[in-house]
Length: 554
Image (cartoon, rainbow, N blue to C red):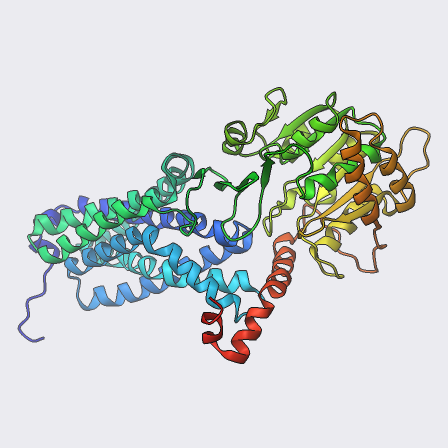
């Protein structure tokens, strides 16, 4: 408007030295990276922490920053008023502070809407829309900061490049701290929600310092401070699974969201809010009704139960089962997440005499020279399948650690069939290492799990022979001499009836290698199939009766 005076840097005493501008750039860069890492932890309990989800997070945030830079540059050329820059920082700080309070409800609402409307790529679509709603607005605002600071910090074209270089260095340095502090300090120590509050609080303090020193916009600054306090008080009171009551434990580690829940006859550990049970202990010793029971066939197929290695120990469910039926068995566990091991001792009665190494399973195998009768690979979790534990190189490493006649059992986690399925890829990959005729599978009743058994030949035995009939005979005789032989015999009899031969690889079979293992994409297809089966009836209700049909089901 004509006659309106434009505020400049010289009108604000706090900006007469450019130091505050560089400090602003530093904390802006820090907040961007902290928000990005926080985004991954906020989404992981609902959508997993796969490379697909990371790609969505990085892509949407980069889009937001790019658009913010373009828009912010144009606005600063038209009006370099620093009040506008710090208003946008204030708004971004408040938005990020409200994410712990509101974000989880947005994610659940988006998921609930899409699960009855989207037929394919549910995880991609739901994660993308959640990111767009929750994270794009504040990151767009932070993207406008750098062009505005360049405009205000530059006094002449003679030092323009120097100013840009300094601001870039401040942003990069802040980004470095914003990367390391959440991962190694704040998230493990105080969790994702408080991490959002810490870094949004730093942004808020920066903006408030500017407006207080400038004696400008006191009402807006006060309102922002009030909203921050409200979120800071309310956010830690509710967890990711806000609908759950009386959880025994809810927390986070460097790797996982962790939830311990007490049920009527068992205690379960989940690392995902929406689906999946990672570990369980039952009040009455014996079969769990889960995939661990099927995996008990491995010692019988090996013909002996002298030693076992569990890659993906969790809270020790499989180890407890092995110890119950084979008390003299030497068991070694490897679990990458120390917090899970801590929970195992606190809530799950993990045997204290079983050594558990806090290590990545494959790296541990590289460092170990031990050999075992049974190796359990239980490191796959929904779509989050570590590619380095799905390749021919990995399974060759496992094979080298098996005794003659030893058996590897893999919990493939999802029943997904077809030429391009994740199970077909894993099966064909394992067949390259163990041989097709040395493999059998058994589906777990009432679950989405499938167990795969692969056996190396014993000394003097012809390689690659484990027919389903011969394996069933081994299982029926496998309980003799074991503790609780009658109980174990019933379990093994059930497994024997479900054993099936593995189909021979077709021409063009997908073999996973360290160089090429698209397990996230394959896993996503399997998740889509599971969702389609589970959500099919609800989608039909929406199609025929509309949203009111779902409401009438209550």
